[in-house]
Image (tube, rainbow over the protein chains, first blue to last red):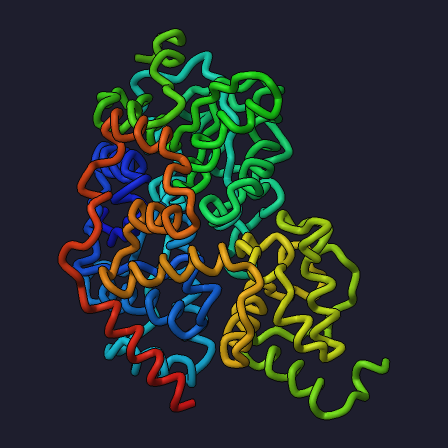
Length: 290
Length: 189
């Protein structure tokens, strides 16, 4: 299977382990990821906040580039990029006037016929659990994980078309297939503070703090994420959260693709497991998963 | 329903927000599910319900100076819960555009600064160079060493490279061209 791949800016910088592990896991699953030639930033939350036309145009530029490729499917690991690409295509499809202005802005024509996937949905639905199960060589037995979906992948469902925004289960399903012990919690789609991480750090410490405290209380070994911004916020702010509670939190925040790679028997170095602030390697050794 | 029988000026503001956002705010029931589930709603940040009320009553200045839409992270929780499915982050965009057009000074200067720096990076390089945006923000807000410990640890682990921190480098015109054309197309409207 061959699909277009939109990594997005974060996956080239702070989210590199997500990109690395995604590529490794897809190779193992015989999914060929073809990076969209000449892709540019989707504008992320700042463009979405500041200017609708700019936000749609930046997304549309990438859609136009993807439309030139023979494959009609695009996969984006970053939930925000995913939601921006999906929204751009749908908003243009519903509004001819907007479409004309966007095409004028990007100097390209759009057909609007792409299927835009987020990575989790793509692996769960298009590749499928049986194909994932077939690759599992080292089950994650004894690893207690909390699946954390965050916001942009699921909410709002009118935009993301996610079937159950209150209790998503795709990540739970994959983790179970990998052999991990999946814990339940009420914070699957609670906000981590997202793009306020730099400008309003204290709000992120508060919002991410709720998640970290709950995860620690549930006795999780790790929190598993599908978003590099969730990963950064939860990984980076544990020290400040701990300072408020007068205790030390050491909860590894892992990408689901890293755990897939581990269960597939791929080398941990190629999965970027050594690149997180809270080091997961000691835990993984202790669980005999390395 | 006094709010529907208003003079032309307040009504014009409501219509401008509705037109730009594509959201039917007049369907709002003021039930407050939005603010009840909003992650950024505090004693200082009023939240979506109050904001929509201000818009419905034509309180333009109040709405354009409401910190809620600056804080909005577009998580979509309010729309998920809203019985009439109002998309608040689209309302936030509309208010941001209208505030800029009206020359209203951003009430949340830090959030505004970060978003401006981010977009400048995209305009110049066609990619958001995250690490540089963060460093630039910290310097401009007089906290150059904020999060330095975390940054250094990530560098030591090889998760961040020095190259990402070096400012400048070759630009990439493609996004800049879109920015310019968006400015032009917006004027023509």
